[in-house]
Length: 249
Image: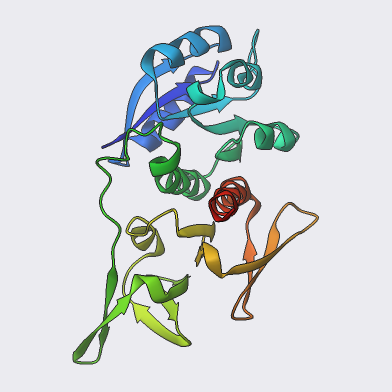
C-alpha cells in the first residue's frame, strides 16, 4: 500500500520541488496540494493523507498552527519545511517525523522519506497494518561458496558500508551486498529502528541514551558498543522507546 501524501506550502515552486522528488519513489502517492493553512486543515480531514509536507511559516494560519489544531488521531505524519532553524521544540511537541531546512538537498530529502516508510506501519492510522509486507525472519549471507542464514532475531545492529551492510549478531559480523535502506524495509519497526543514516539498532539492545548539546544523542548498547543517533531520527526513536517501555509495564 502506498503512502498518501499532501504538500502544504504557499510557494508554488517549493510545492513543485517536493512533487518532483516524490515522483522518484514508488512508495509515495501525491493526493493533494494546498497553499495556505486554513484550506490545508480542511483538506487533511477530507483526504486523510498518511504524510504531509508542511511549510512552517505561511500567511494566515502557519503550518504549526494548522497541525496543532488537528486532534492527535487526525494528525498525519508530518515533515516540516522551513528556512529557519528555530522551530525544533514545536516540531518535537507535534511529534513531527522530520524537520528539513530549506533549501533541502536530495540526500536529506531521501533520508526523510526513508524515515516515513519506516514509521508508516505505526503512524499511518492503521492503513498498513493488515497489508504490510511481513518482516524478514532470516538474512541470507554469502560467505565464499556457502550461504549462511542469520536469524533476524539475533541481529543487534546493522551498519552501512557503502553498497554493503554489516550485520552484527552474537559477536560476529556478516557482510551483505545490500543497501541499508533495503534492509530497513525488511525489518519489524517494533523491534528495529534507524538511528542514523548509516545505522539501525534493535531497540532492546539500547541500554542508555545520552542527549548531546546539538540535539544528537549517544547510544550505549548492551554489548558495550557506542553509536551516535542523529537528531533527525530522535523524535521517532524516542517515541519507539516510550512504546516499548509502556508494553513492558
